[in-house]
Length: 225
Ligand SMILES: [Zn+2]
Image 1: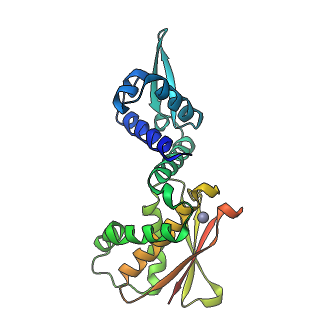
Image 2: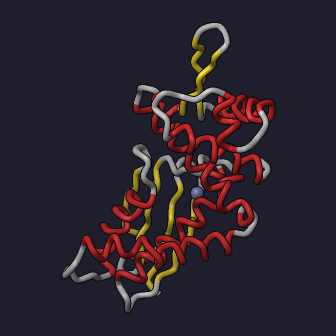
Image 3: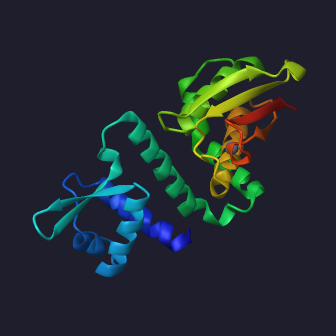
């Protein structure tokens, strides 16, 4: 997906998210500063991806809404995944080909904001490598604010004192190569959160199984250095 197309779709989605009463093609076109025909084409693409839907009012007016307003948990979860993928392709498009860069972005994100959330929540708590394993699972659930993404921690049998495995169920990459860097960003985020919570411990975070390679889950191996 071309970058400009993702950006326009993201803008449209953001505009629709703010409107309870829906918007017509003309209203959307005005708000994003595009002509009516191009706007209609974008809306068609987005409806095809089930990011938005259309309701006919009278003979000519069609109103557009974000798909979020639809009913079931499943549908809402699917919508959120599409939303995050779109967000990802807008902001990280340039780094999709470069896993190292994606990892660095995640690491920087952890330092800038994510770690604050945890340090505030666990004020006065003494961190060790052992208890960080539970916190890492919580960290994943906070950095993936999507209802059906779940994290589980497993002991790594081969090196149980110094490493553990973190399995992400329903990772947002959805096994699509174009979103693989979501997992790399997450690896950087995890490394940053862990290293900044336990200041004296450096860790290596490696994705050892990915849905992009046809596996059921994305799994990270986290090793104390
Ligand atoms: Zn993955």
